[in-house]
Amino acid sequence: MKLLSWNVNGLRAVLGKGFGEFVGTEKPDILCLQETKARREQVTLPPELDGYHAFWNSAQKPGYSGVAVFTRDQPLNVTEGMGIDEHDTEGRVLTLEYPDFALVNVYTPNAQDELRRLPYRLQWDAAFRHHLQTLAAHKPVIFCGDLNVAHHEIDLARPASNRKNPGFSDEERASFTELLGAGFTDSFRHFHPDQPGHYSWWSYRANARQNNVGWRIDYFGVTPSFMGNVKSASILPHVHGSDHCPVGVVLG
Image 1 (cartoon, rainbow, N blue to C red):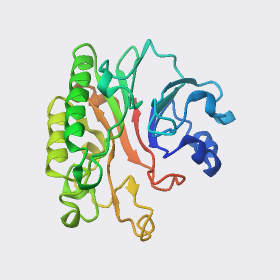
Image 2 (cartoon, rainbow, N blue to C red; image 1 turned 30 degrees about the horizontal axis):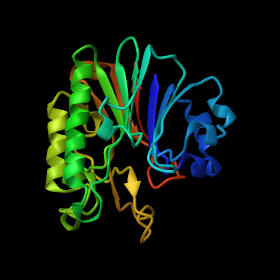
Image 3 (cartoon, rainbow, N blue to C red; image 1 turned 180 degrees about the horizontal axis):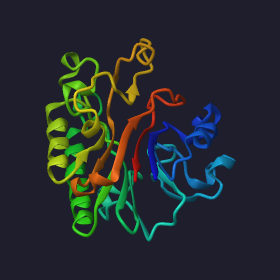
């Protein structure tokens, strides 16, 4: 079973940039998207997604945020948000329950310039951590998506100059450490513990992607007891169309 996650930075925009071909080539069993920036009725999906069950959680604010999941197998249950009004207006969480695991697609809020949204971000992180722990009390959990944080220095090209910037502040990194400590494994680092230069997001400025000056901020986190079912974890930097590239895991 192949699971892929991709922050598409606008689903309607990426449709004209080879999105259908990407789906047709990769043939994911489950495809999780973040930053869809659209409601379901605003999007004409490519034929490559025919036969998939589609689930959406869109932001109340038009053209903002939003997540979606396309899955070949019908899930047992689907939940939008975390059940907390103050955190559920931006379309950031979608939970699908399957027989063997729960899958959580997430688009974590950005701390924004000068960390002006950091206090909210940390509150949100705590709520999300609780959401995952509640699910994990019943069955293994896989979470995936744009977590908007590079965890360690190896996870971005220029750690020294980004130390207090959004996505690499001490507070956000500590919060992500706490998330993993609550019972999750960073699947990519499990398989590639010491390999630098693997990134999932690049700025549009200064030829960052061509020069691979990037950040790894997109993840698959997995309950440790379920890691034996994860056969590989990958990043797909050859896939263009967004400032992010897809990341994935294969279950077996």
